View 1 (tube, chains in turn cyan, blue):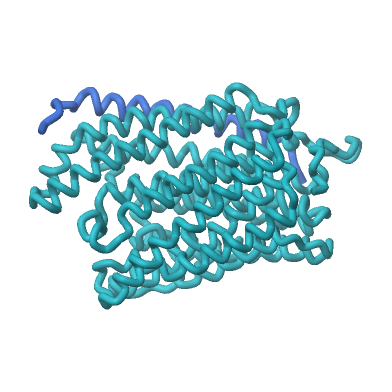
View 2 (view 1 turned 120 degrees about the vertical axis):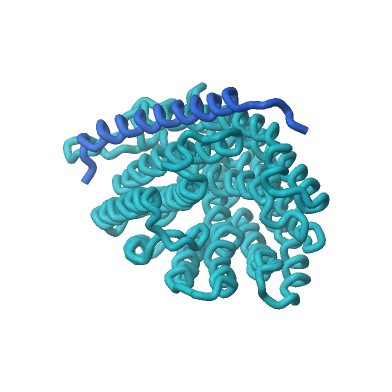
Length: 455
Length: 41
């Protein structure tokens, strides 16, 4: 760690990890409801546990993005953060917003707009936090005068995320109109501007971990961003199938969605190429696992599994079934969870005391158990989804009758989700067991810098 | 701005969350075993 102010990232990561654990609690509670008469049915019904599960995901991933940005920007711009005080104020506000939103959901306090259920006061706090965040980052870069392409892509992604949240502040009485604009936020986040954030973190990690040439890596970054824009924006239309909008969205959605994996293929080639060219010299092999793993799992979950049901003639059968859950779990995990865990794993040896830079064996167990568990969960959702489509959509069986027939796949889901949860628990334990480096004035400047930090 | 006093509470909170995760696994497994009525196809 070259700059003292980078240490604010530790607290963002700590909050993110705590919320990640909580997200899985509600995921398991949701999955259990598919298997029997749930004793918690009237206290925590499925709609509540699912809302909390998905909202916690969004909040903790964004918390991770913020922490990773506070780590990366001083490193790239070679300066201290503009204001650590603002960064802490932002974290406190953000955490209070997240926690009170979850408590609100327990009491059915929410807008009911899927994935954007936060009530208006919470959304206003989100906007305030984003403004503080963007101001702090922009001023840091302005102060230093050094602005790299990697930072440019990251900032473009973060600014665009903030702008695209604006449609979420509006309320529409018409359900179709509401869905139409909801995807301006959600789709353009996860299949658009968040991909830019992810690509920027990946470029940063590959430059630092592999020592690959910055110029080459950043040129590839332009290609990836270009592909994301070409396919991702009009790819929003794959959410417009049969939701009450004109039918011309069907061919638009089909064509541009089919192009979406191109950026992810490019990203995987990019990651593999970097490692092949520059070797595996960096001691933090665990961070390298997470980085390369993220590129490959994104290609699998977001690219291949998205492509599997994005074509309108396929999607007319799979729309709103467990096939969507299959794609959603693998895509989010590969693209966003793994890249945040990669940034945490890269920064952790500098942020905490006595942590081995090559990673602990617990860290490797966490990695492989999560990969195994998430792969199994994806297959469970896939088999359950295929069964559901045939029984319910093709044979015309009632929803609950079909659910009984596919129940066996939920046994597999719970088994593999448990493996995944243990993997996450190991990561959380491994993160918290080393105390952070508390910097005081009488302590010498920390200088745990890797050999390639000036790349 | 960092305070040692925050590390203790958040570490304890993380352990509470870890316990919650273990309880959720146990709960989901229990429901699976208690109500599993066969393959059902």
